[in-house]
Length: 70
Length: 463
Image 1 (cartoon, each protein chain N blue to C red):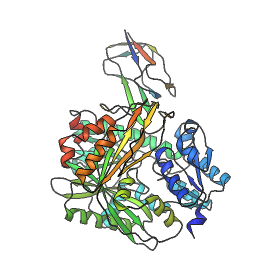
Image 2 (tube, each protein chain N blue to C red; image 1 turned 30 degrees about the vertical axis):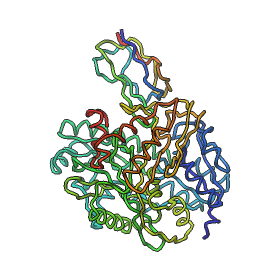
Image 3 (cartoon, rainbow over the protein chains, first blue to last red; image 1 turned 180 degrees about the vertical axis):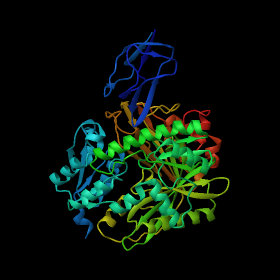
């Protein structure tokens, strides 16, 4: 199991995957936007998106849980 | 019209540039009106204005990009002129027109000039016709991938892919083959769609139908050098020297200096003359910037784009010319014809202090606990924040501009080292450590550097 957390304060600009979806290492899970920059958040291992904790338009803080990959 | 009749001046911007414009407006004895989002209510520019009007939530589309709200604020405060700063609505011809239609003075070039230069493809064709050198590239927008692939075959790889509208390096990338072009085209299309949405939100009505993508021959060892021009009433255009903006990450500028250490006097003279021709070709009025790419090896240049507004890095020009560009903009907007001697003295360098980590340059907004600016001879800091303020994720990461001026480049570098070392910022991440590193880097110190410098410093990483 891998927890994917936010590296910075950001807005969730796009949610690319759904809960239950299979993902591979390097796949984009969500795209954050902070300070006019798009920051893709990537899966760091193969697995299934067990939990997705953010929705488009959310403002998230550094360290907030974005997703859990199992 | 006299300058006295221009006020109150509404500053339709935020952060360091709003603060900097307000300073000159007040020095000229005019009232300054700020507009601000909810997120910015506590920032220095709001406090320092004579009057401040809240115009909505943090999201730029609902505040700083909302033309109707800005115009309402102008009406409510009795403002008689609008200064747009840079970014946001500054290059939105629809907004410029709305300001003029409301009976107010627009501190900028005519809406027609903004329109003609705003579309990069149109601007490029116009410059070519005016005898300004341009890079091999698309004369019509590439609206789908097949057109882009065909264009790239004609131009030859590598190509630079960018959106015809928009700016700030967003959506720009280099493609070295067809596979990379497909990716670059998609990225630029996404950026184009966002620019179109922002323009529509601003009430500009010039949202484009499809993605308008521009391809240009990519120059490998290029310097990014731009010329500051000033169009005076009566049609005369003067060039106020150049700025070298080759220190870039993600195609966005980090450091700018004037004069450029990479131009021969002969090339400088040709570039300044071409910039004057460019300005005259569009009947340019006020401050503008002609951006060029210089082939460092061939000592030749091509026109890149024209920015029809005040530039972030304008302090570099102010330091070497002794002029106040905002004052000149206001005087020209008021119909005055100021005497401008295009003489430059010494060497100036600007460092953009960004809220980002100094290794990967990823955003790091946060609350500022310590903010201590350097002071001293030949040091100028234009900042948007102070201790106790919060840098939020809603806007660009520019916190301050640290500028130095000295007789020679060597002295300016030394002055910069001391100033960077004594600038204390805690809370948000910041790139001062990168600035210090750059100031010791042999390429930068020698002056013989190009737009690939930051990537080389980071081992080919993000730049």
